[in-house]
Length: 200
Image (spheres, rainbow, N blue to C red):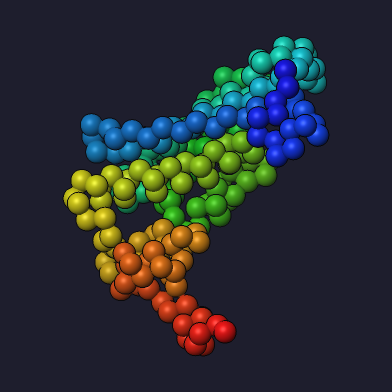
């Protein structure tokens, strides 16, 4: 199987898929008012391979199949965190699962990556679960404040007068950019060009 559909010079080369990593996330609002953010990571190879401990892995069979569920409250504090491993390359891999529970009490926000490293870093945990927890934090931002904003109809409210968490985190939401100026004028900052005069 080859693939040239996204190549800018399809006539110059062809491609064949080798490894496929899929990370799927779904968020749920629970009947008790808490939020479940679930992530599933799978790795498959388009060719038959041999693993040190598992031996033969047929093409298309999962190399990794890992599931993580983090339960959060409205303040995005972790109530519980748990993980399971359906398929992993080594028998020792599930030894990393109990450390995921250490994320209970951590808050999604500034310092989230540091908390992951402290609780699950290096040989304390699983590389792939650490990556999944970063995706889960992004999903939490996409879920909890957005749902409340949609429910209340207040799309621009900050918390206690502070800028919403997404401001300043990407090009579109730059404090000195036009989007913030239009929708959050109270937090907008004049850009350098306007301070220095016309850029002629």
